[in-house]
Amino acid sequence: MKKVVKILAVIFLGIILSIGIGAYIFYKNIHVPAVQEENNIASQNNTEKKSEGLSSINILVVGSDENNLSDTLFIANYNPKNKTISILSIPRDTYYPRPGYNSPGDKKINAAFTEDGIEGTKKAVENLLGINIDHYIIIDYEGFKKVIDTIGGVEVDIPFDMKYDDNSANPPLHINLKKGRQVLDGEKAIQFVRYRHGYIDGDLGRIKAQHQFLEALFKKLTQPSTLPKLPSLAIAVSKHIKTDLTATEIAKYAYQFVKDKPSSIKSFTLPGEPDYKDGVSYFFADNTKIPEVVAEFLGDKTTFSFDSSEIEKNKAIKVEVLNGTNIPGLASKYAETLRKQGFDVVRIGNVVGTTFSTSHVYARTDEEKAKKVANALSIICVEKDITPDSSVDVTVILGKDKSK
Image 1 (tube, rainbow, N blue to C red):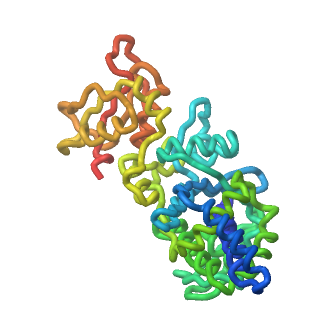
Image 2 (image 1 turned 60 degrees about the horizontal axis):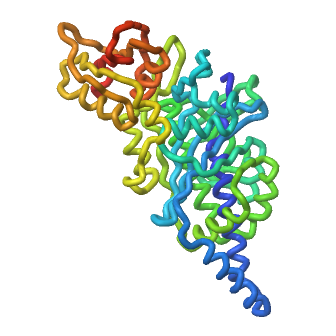
Image 3 (image 1 turned 135 degrees about the vertical axis):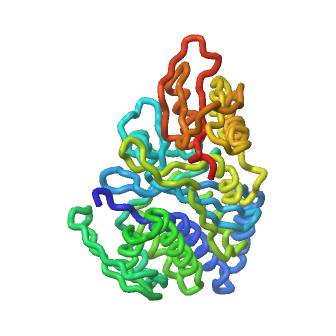
C-alpha cells in the first residue's frame, strides 16, 4: 500500500470538537455558582442574539499528511433550520481532470490539494458538486490517538477479523483486530479506520465503516460525561488543525448546536462507480445522480444549483448527444443533465446501424471542451475528431454503460 489512507474520522473530529468546545462553554455557563449567574445570563443572551438567523454552513474537511498529500475529502453541513448534521464523502480517486495537468495521478481529485492548495481543492469540490464551500478545516494524523484515549475510547462493531501489515507505510501499519463489538482505544481505532482490505465493495466499504465510526464518535463526544474533557481534547489537536473559522463563528454555531441537540449524523457518499482508464484506477462520479444526493445532503431540495460561473462558461460549448443503444430515451436523459450544467445541447438523435457498449465523447473543435463534457457525464473515452466546419464542439455517443 504505497499511500496510507488517512482517517476520515479524525478529520471530522475537528468539526465536532469545535462544536464541542462551544458546547462546553455553554455547559459551564449553566452550571455556575449563584454569584456569577447574572453576568453569565447577560453573556448567554448576547450569544443567543448573535445566533439568530444562522444559515446552513458547508465546511470542506481535508486530511493531509506530512508530505502535503490529501488522502481524505468530505464536506460537513450543519443546517440550523432542519437541526441536522450531514457529511458527504468524496473518494480520493475521484476522476477530476484539470486543464494543464495530464499525468494519471493529476486527474484524481486529491491531487488538487497537493498542487493547488486548499483554494484549488475548494474550487474542485464546488465544481464537482455545484455547492458553495463556506469554510475549511485541514487536519493531520497525529492527534487522533490522543483524542480517542482522552474520551475513553469509542465503541464499534468490527464486522470481521482484520489482519494486515505494511512496513513500508509512513508510519508503519500493523492491524490486528478481532470481529465483534468492542471499545477501541486510540491505537485500535487507528487500525480500524485505516483498514482497507477485505471489504466486498472495496474503498466504498471502508468509507461506510468510517461513517459508522463517526456516528459512534459523535455520540461519545456529545455525552454529558465527555463535556468536561473537551478542553483537554482541544489541547490534544490544536497543533494539528488549520481552519478559516473564527472563534466567533464557532461560538455562534456551537450555541445553536447545543440548543438544537441533533441526535445523529446523516452520511452520504459521492454517487458513482470505480473503473479503469488507461490502466489507472479511478472513481467516476455519476453526474446524473449528484443533484439528488447533494439536495438530500443539504436537507433542502430547493437549494441545489451548479456553480453560476461554470454554467456561463459551459453555455459556449455546443453539444450533440446521440443514443448508441436500442434503449429509448437515453439521449434525452443525458442531454437534460448537460443542460442543467449550462451546456448548449443543439441536437439529440440516434446512431443508425450499430450499437455501442461503451460511451464515447468526440472533440470536434477543441479537446478541452470535450473533456469538460466527458467529466460532466463521467465518460472515460475522449477522442479527437477535429472537423473545421463542424456545427458542434462536442459529440457524445451514449453506450450501454449509461443504461444503468
